[in-house]
Length: 366
Image (cartoon, rainbow, N blue to C red; front, top):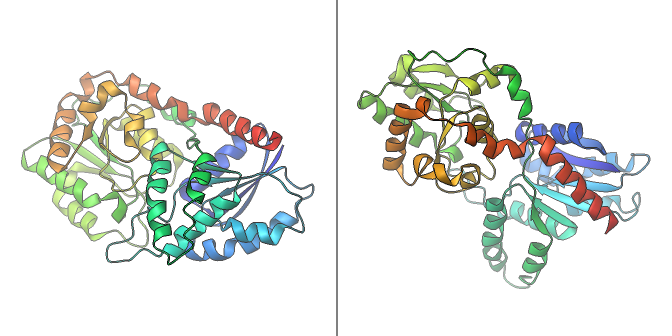
């Protein structure tokens, strides 16, 4: 099969996913991409440019695989002369209906409607987690009822029937190359890892408050901030840098994948305070490398933690976050965490890519 993979926002997790599937699929996957910037313009205009590039493919692809940042309706309308009918799959990394708006901003339903209309055009809609699928279909009726008439609520069960969960593939096995040979220095306090974007939807202020409370109790720990910061470092991080001082052993994004992997292997604990997470790739990578998770008991996170670990790892509210972090710092190095790694190994591309391939083969046959 020849699969045209259309990605108008080629950066970050989108870029890693695209290149991972291109590398791991047994089919010929042809990436058609635009740089990952100006996301609103990409959702409006990206389809025009990608339709032109799609029409130039010779021979034509057997299947189109588009992502949620593409206006699929426009692309298909512009491609009708150049392409014979073929199956179309839409992969939902995120959506613009349940992604939390920035503080003080109001949601623009137009972008959620682009996602909705794109789903109507697709033969299969693929969500990266069950949580994501459920969140979308919980909110979709409210969006449609917002409009004055012809709300088309009858389309919801039709969309649900062609929607499935197809998890994000990750290049987990490549992390093994950086696995340390020597045992960690037990004289150093346990290392807590923060590997999320430094943005509002990850609620960093909650995590920083928890670190302050641990410090006030005299709990010994180190912390590495690896998440990506855009434009400028948020002021709450700069203030925390002053307060926490030598407890901080890494402050900022690392460009090298190898260096990032080495930090994952050093970490004793990985923590999240996110208010939004459709999948959670950075947490999965840390779990694969043996970090003990301290995660909110919501969003997509429960799927990554074995049931036997959930009382130790999953919190409800800030008070429990602090208590679980303190307990993890005390005992993380005495606990065998190999089953955490086993739980997430299923997301490696070696395991996930064949699922993608089979689904797309079945779609073409149908």
